[in-house]
Amino acid sequence: MNEPIPVSRAVDGGTAKLLPDLDRPRAWLLTVDGAPQSYVDLDDPGHLEFEYARRIAHVLDAAAAPGAPLDVLHLGGGALTLPRYLAAARPGSRQVVIEADRGLLELVAEQLPLPSGAGVTVRPEDARAALEAAPEGSADVIVADVFGGSRVPAHLTSVEYARAAARALRPGGWYAANLADGAPFAFLRSQLATYRTAFAHLALIAEPSVLRGRRFGNAVLVASQSPPPVAVLARRTAADAFPARVEHGEALERFMGGAAPVRDEDATPSPEPPNGAFSVG
Image (cartoon, rainbow, N blue to C red; front, side):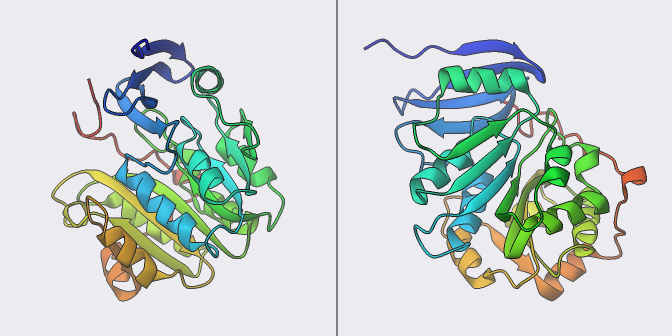
């Protein structure tokens, strides 16, 4: 059998590379301009290499009874890691993936095709436009993992965007977003304040070292109109290889401090990660 070889291609967002994992025969790391975007094991879609993906998967796992299908809107596609995971864990789920980078979609479709019957529809569109066009109350879960390079685009950080997400969710539905920040957390605090204008309940999942400001890193925001299963999420995230903490209630209010919501006219992208925070190779 031939050894897999790396693939490099210019896409809309820069230079995409697919790098084989030599320890797992059909597993690949996707990077764009050196920043890790996705990790996919075609033989084992339940293997989630990135901790933030594992944390979002915990949210998906807790969103309904085991194996029950979900209607999920994914904003940001990458190599379709979480759609593959959900298709395997919850057969019959209906998933729509929105990814603005057409070149990236073509690369993934060619090199890492979805299995037949996965129930995943992929559309090359802007995430904000697709969210605003989504039918009201059409999704059980919205997963947002949209980065332009290593930054969340400004138009996906505002009160208007958060309200569009709330409108698209069914009663009891959950919004889960991958965000990134470091001390003093101006961006993360403002995002919490922003989502509080549209959702009744918030939780934040992150490693203690990130929450204490010791390093720049990912944090998964969970927003809903009904209380999320904090105890379940806390138990599962604490058991991960890199344990995380679930902040909610008064502790999250203290973390938020006096941060103000962000409206479209004042929105800015998430901060640029420090050199070497996420890049590989």
